[in-house]
Amino acid sequence: MPAAALKPKSLPTQSTVKRAVLLDSPYAPAQKRPLPAGRPREWYVTHNRRLKAMRLAIALLDSGVYLPNQARNETIRSTAESIGIHPPSDTTCHMVRALMRYSR
Image 1 (tube, rainbow, N blue to C red):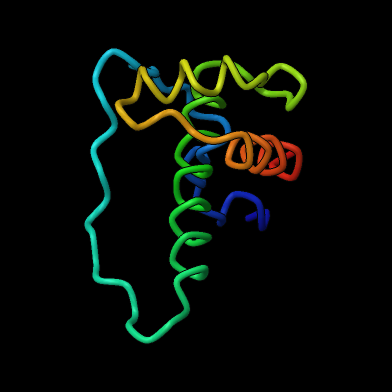
Image 2 (tube, rainbow, N blue to C red):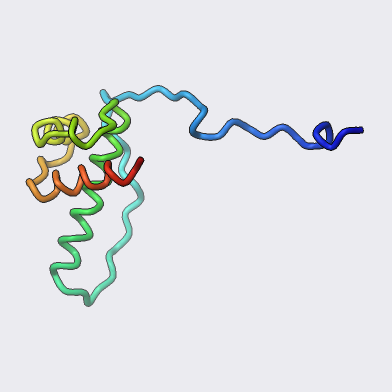
């Protein structure tokens, strides 16, 4: 019997599975855990900024904005409004574009 016939068929990977994107309902927040104590304030600010940028980058990618030059500040801010988070600062918008640049 050929070796290929003995291999079980693999399930489709996430990249081949088509899924519907619903931006009408807000994203369900992840389980929150307390942040570690004793860090400088700047660490917490940066940490929260990164989390917000990640949420926005994922929402933009889900909505069909794949290139960083398509994600202008207005686009990012309107996406933030549609998913129910506060409008991001210019620094956070820059971070969103950087995440999108490295997601390819």
